[in-house]
Amino acid sequence: SQKIEQNSEALNIQEGKTATLTCNYTNYSPAYLQWYRQDPGRGPVFLLLIRENEKEKRKERLKVTFDTTLKQSLFHITASQPADSATYLCARLDNYGQNFVFGPGTRLSVLP
Amino acid sequence: DTGVSQDPRHKITKRGQNVTFRCDPISEHNRLYWYRQTLGQGPEFLTYFQNEAQLEKSRLLSDRFSAERPKGSFSTLEIQRTEQGDSAMYLCASSLGSRAEKLFFGSGTQLSVL
Image (spheres, rainbow over the protein chains, first blue to last red):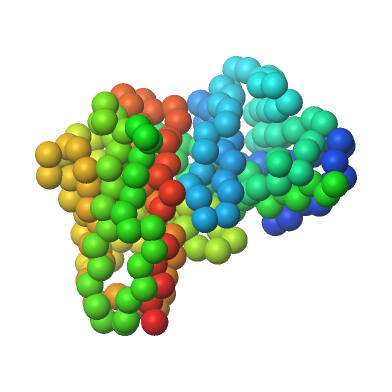
């Protein structure tokens, strides 16, 4: 079955620095990977999708990469701000392409 | 507000009681998903509907769980004879089309079974 791992349960960084979160997957490469943000007590909010044939995608201060050789996606937040503090989830489609498998998430804290 | 809405936001119940949650998806979305999330974990898939048809159920969905989407609009998730292990956040999400590329989540229903 498909599995998603995210590098660490929690990551603390200083305001202004770049946060880098890692997502590793097993088995075959999915057609795309997604990244979501989740605040405490709320549902996840979609941020970005990166396709297998895209090496990199950017949206404002966010950048996502997809390396099918390493079976890994990296999620970067540049010039991080305390408001970026949240849990970030990586997701992929399951074996049948019908629903999404989520990683455990990485809880990011940006310290002022 | 045209997002996904879930009701109630919080539910406290005693072990053995039945509970029902409701989800109203974004109106034009034909797909509706239920996920369960426990502290420190990502959402785990329970079931999904395309219109009114329930197309897939996870093995996490025991016989005590049932979900419906009678007219292809709102959905309900019922848990019978609740157990303490059912305590979790129950999330509903919706998407448009048969090849959904992103999910829109509601704020969830936090269930506590005492």
